[in-house]
Image 1 (cartoon, rainbow, N blue to C red):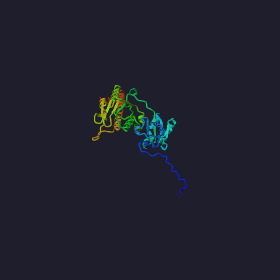
Image 2 (image 1 turned 30 degrees about the vertical axis):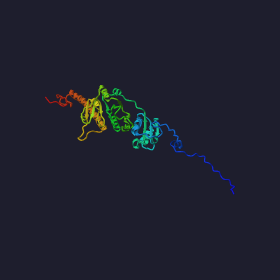
Image 3 (image 1 turned 180 degrees about the vertical axis):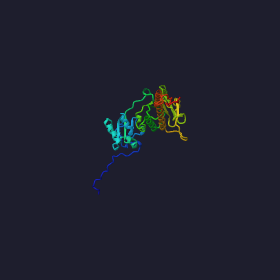
Image 4 (image 1 turned 45 degrees about the vertical axis):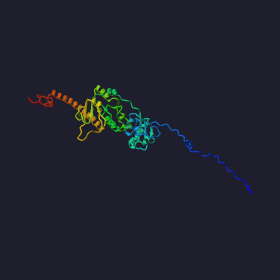
Length: 340
């Protein structure tokens, strides 16, 4: 007998049979991944954090206590980045002064470059400064007095050296610094830091042709003294003119030929045997201070010579400065002459 229970029908699968796997079929099977829209890149100094290499920081950026303080005092600081975890009195004073002057203040920790610059370099402070006005030799010459010094740097490469030179130039009262537009280190945030902010206060002239700039200064009464490591007169005995241009060369190659040929004099710093040269920043400081000392000594001798001549003249008119020995006369040195 047949089983009265109806048989179950097998359901046919509606799935299509898989065909051969191809690259196109694999691509179609992968889910589509839509890219999220990227946020616009913030401007330098914006609140969003981004990693900025130190070498790519904008030129109007300063970091460190001294550069920020100088920028604030000079009215150049537009934005202050401040690490509120620092409790040093000077940082608190700078923060309070910036607040009182209406400077924009932002937290330093939220800036991307804060992770790039070590804390010992930015010292808890950084800032964005206003664009500095350009300096021109024509203005420097017009405003210069009888005692004037211009420093020409022929392709200094290292920002630490350049910053140290600028700091010394500010300390010795240099009227202007002339840099080449190409071939040397430009003014960067690292230069501001190495100069302790003095680079913000100096007249810095960038010229395409240093030889032409030197000729311009010559035409306006300046004498040009180039510093060499092994040639020239002894800088310790050289008589520096009142209106002078001091030329310093590259760290390794010295002055270029055209720059060297433009010099009226060459001087060298005497050193003991076995020492070939000094660091460019040290050598520049030595020459600048030697020039200052020489001119100060010459001025002292001139003033004392005039005073001595006046005193001698007065004594010669009155005869004996002691009022004794009525017939005796004084010689040119103010001493009593021989009797008879």
